[in-house]
Amino acid sequence: MSGLDSPPSPAAGSLWLSREADVVAHLFFAAAEIGTVLVELGGEKVKATLDFPRTESRTVKLTVTDTEGEVPFRPVEGAVARVTYQRGPASYSWLTNVVEAPSARDWSLAYPTAIERNERRIVTRHRVLGRAGFRLHIDMGDGVVRALPLFDASAAGLGFIHRPDLRSVVDGARLQGRLVLPEGTAVEVELEVANLRPVPGGGSDRVVGCRFVGLPPDSQIRIAKALAAYDWSDA
Image 1 (cartoon, helix red, strand yellow):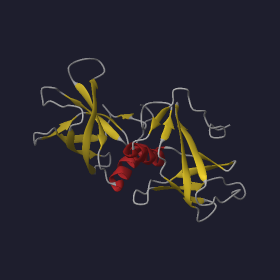
Image 2 (cartoon, one colour):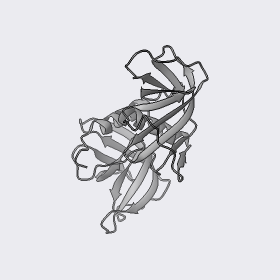
Image 3 (cartoon, rainbow, N blue to C red):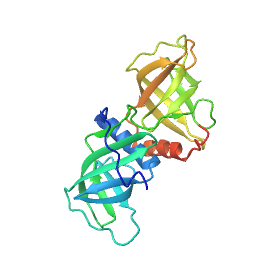
C-alpha cells in the first residue's frame, strides 16, 4: 500500500512554515521533487500532481491522476482542501481553498498560509560538495567575484564554504551571486545569510547558509528542475 493511501499523522513536534517566501519556495520544491500528493476534500480523497506556483495569481494548479474510472467529484469554488505528501522521513500537510476547477481533473488552489512539517528544513537540501555540476560565483561584498565551494543547494537557498580570512560575513548580510547549473547555464541570485555553521570535520572554515531573496519565478523553476533532474542516487 502506498504511503499516500493513509496520510501520515502530524508528529507531536510538528513545525509550522508560515513566512510567505518560505511557503512559496517550498511549493516550487514540491512541484519539482514530489511525485504524487493526496488531496482530501469533502470526505473524498484523490491523488494528484502539483504544478509550479503561479506567483501572479498566488495559486497552485493540480492535476488529478486517479486513472481508474471517473473522478468522483468536481469541487466547488471556496471548498476547503487538505494536501499531504512525504519525502523520505519528512511529511508535509497544508490546508487551502479551491479557487477554480475548470474540470474534474484540473483544479487551482490558493496558496496555503502555512505548511505543517515534521522537520525544520523548508525543503530537501541536497549536498553538492564534491559533486560535479553545480557551481557558485559570489561577490562577498568587496566587489570581487570569487568561485567558492558550494556545500548544498535547495529550491529555497544554498550554502557555501567561506574562509573567515576572506571577509567578515554576518547573519542578515545580502550577497550577489551566480549559480551555475549542471547544463552550464547560470542563474543570477541575491542571497541573504541565514546562518553560519562549522564545516563538518573541523577547521576554521564555515558553511554560510543563505536563502534566496526576490528570485524570479522562472529562475526558481530552473533551479528546482535542475535539482530534481540531478542523479542523487549515490548521495
